[in-house]
Amino acid sequence: MRPELVRRALVLALVCASALVPLRVARAGLGSLYTELVCREISDVPKAFDFATSFVGLVNCDRLCLDAFLVCKRDVDEAASCQVAFANDWIAFDSRLDCNGESGSALSDCKAGWAADKKFWQDTIKGNQLSGRFSCGTKLNGCSTNCSGH
Amino acid sequence: MTRAPLLLRLLPLCVATLLALVPLLALAGAPLPDPNDPNDPNSPLGRGDDIPCFDAAKVAPSLSLVIHSDPNDPNSPVTGSFYSGLKDCATLCKRAGVSCAKFVKRAVACELRFADDRARFKVRTNCEGLRGAELKTCAAESEPARTLQRQTASNKLTPALDACAARAAECTGTCNAP
Image 1 (cartoon, rainbow over the protein chains, first blue to last red):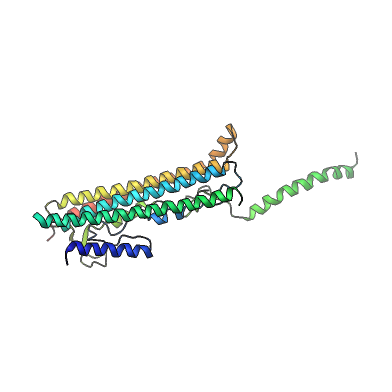
Image 2: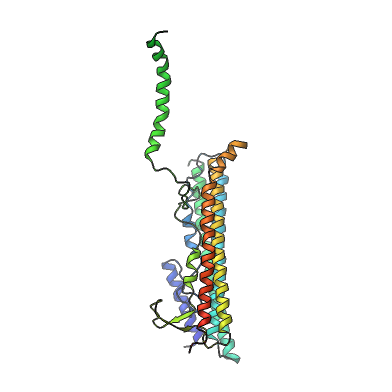
């Protein structure tokens, strides 16, 4: 089996596993740089926010809910940005190691395989980012509902 | 004036004072918030024991870089680096250290930012409607927790960066390993 197919299968397995448990990078590829993720899990970021009833009774309740949502969303985006940087570093080191000694079309194929992995990884992060933003939005809705006493 | 009428006149005042003390006495039984608790359990943004940031101290231990004689035991002897044999091994080890430092700085910056967020929301929540000196006094109550949280985050920076440098040096030292 071609190396890039093996890597793709590994990444696919990782993504499938992440649907069941929070995403933890577990040596997709060689893991020559890091053994695990050094950024906050995106899905964990909204869990650190719990402002559903914090502003009830205040004149600016709705505004405070919105601003708390924006902080939550910003931190989700920051975690996603961190993970993109992490993926770039991870792939850069592993591909350097994996493609060492290759030349010509074999080197091109090797690099193309890793580029595809990186794209797949980035897309996964984007998906998690959207999901994290949605969770922040759900918290905003709960907070705003409590403001109006419904 | 006789003694009895004076007591009668003071009776409503005494009752009012006692009634005002009831909630204070009830609060006395509850655990008081510790302004020096870096977890900040009273933050309007959320639970005190959870922040949306990665722990800077865990970045360097997550670096792989070296190969151990027993892959399942991180305390087993180091037999080489992942980049041993590559002509740019030392450069890769150095770059790994730079990557590590980058994520340490991100983690600390996140904690510093969140300390400011917590303090800002605490002021907006607890001091709503206040102006001038009253607002200043109220806002000052959030300052010790913010200062402590920022200090806690800042204190992580140097040891975490040193750990990154040490791991990178360890990596470089094994570049020529067989």
